[in-house]
Amino acid sequence: GAGVSQSPSNKVTEKGKDVELRCDPISGHTALYWYRQSLGQGLEFLIYFQGNSAPDKSGLPSDRFSAERTGGSVSTLTIQRTQQEDSAVYLCASSLQGAPEEQYFGPGTRLTVT
Amino acid sequence: ILNVEQSPQSLHVQEGDSTNFTCSFPSSNFYALHWYRWETAKSPEALFVMTLNGDEKKKGRISATLNTKEGYSYLYIKGSQPEDSATYLCAPNAGGTSYGKLTFGQGTILTVHP
Image (tube, helix red, strand yellow):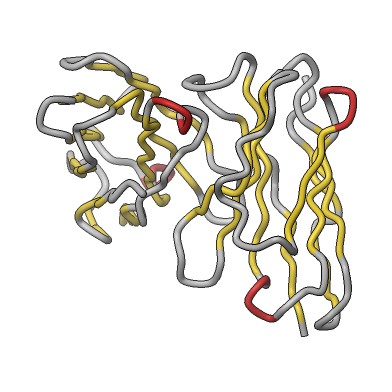
């Protein structure tokens, strides 16, 4: 079946612009996660959605970052007023029932802020 | 914030060699420990999710053990093959309100030479 998909695969934006990154999880997966990997850094947790529960936003680095998940499926990560330090690969993952199940990762979106 | 350490940072082995890596994590408030393999230009792929002290899991030539009391996990690869070349990541889940959040280590980069 179809895996996790993300779009766009690459995004180049100017500093100060807003960007939206999209994630389509595996159909039927109730949990969805966002991570990022900055150059030379490890994978960093951003946010976790589980069913209808309030999301765990504890990893969002600043209030310029927000995410929503509509209808329990597609998720959008929005970065407002992008900064150069936001340049990273943004990965989305989903799992069937939520923690601690194994997560299925998408191919990522490479964001470059110039 | 969980302090997750993986060692060694990188490893070069010959085809056919067996090898192992270590993941250390705080033993308090443990919920689960994940291992992922991340090949270049691909998405991270789940290997194991382990929850119980003394757990041993196996998938083909790869196996893992877990010691939650002392806070470490070992990943073993028997008879390494070039296709095993990848970054191997461990990530514990803490309990409580952070149970959905994975904290990834920096990874062990394995290169298997033919």
